[in-house]
Image (cartoon, rainbow, N blue to C red; front, side, top):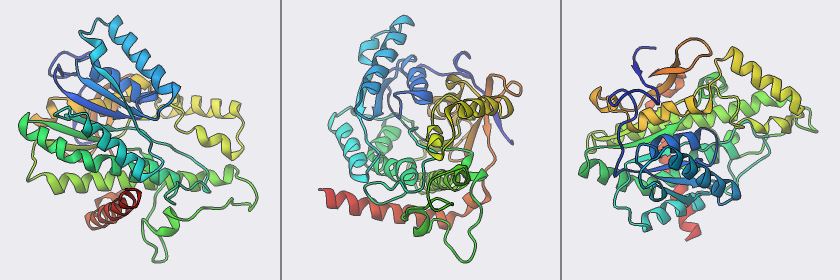
Length: 361
């Protein structure tokens, strides 16, 4: 880890979360887990936050919970800081529509976009309604479809107000599960992202299929990292005050992100023990600490002072298993340095997004 910067939710102005009065943020997947904590960090520092999640009782409850916490913390004008932005990531068209709905609200600015929502460890026969492997669709394609219409407003804000941030939440799965393809296959080949997988035993999904699911999840997060880097490089010269960054929340056993594990025939009590072991042996973080890396990338003043852009930024703990004390540069998959593939992936994704949004119009 080459560079680290002190950062916690309680540090004084300068090393912690600054005053965000007047700023507007969108946080996807902020109806629970680290997303709701990220939204709270921003709103509790006077940022207007849009909770971008599926229309559901869970999202309504998250809004109520956040408002209650803000009122308890005596945040001024708390009622005006929180808004719900309905967002479905199950299709490209739906994600694109959600972005255009936000633009129709005429907020005049968008200072922070945090693409936090995600799914993991789904069985391989799940394809989206657009025909893509569901993890690749939700974690990468639909988020890009949501982001692209918002980019001009982020760019405008970076020019008019001197700063804007686009933060894409990644995962260490991008390096733990993905290896160079063999036999002339492409890294992001159609057989990986447009074909339903079959159980290893030919009948039902079991423990032996978890590795394949992890690879598909890791592939979606590698796509996030590579395209984030490409976008940062693409826009740096024209919009130097728009910082585009990938973060990793750390190992968090309580988010439910790996809740799909039950589909592999693993009893809930075994999952509980596994989550506990992960928290012990992999330095498991609380959801509050898990939200810090994205919050840092979204608003920390040091990001601009140190000229930080792109990269892969992770939480640094006080001690193994302890609280987060800083944010630092994390280890990445060597494949992520392939800028040619990153550009090809971006161009391919944009082509598909344009195709599906045109068909839906």
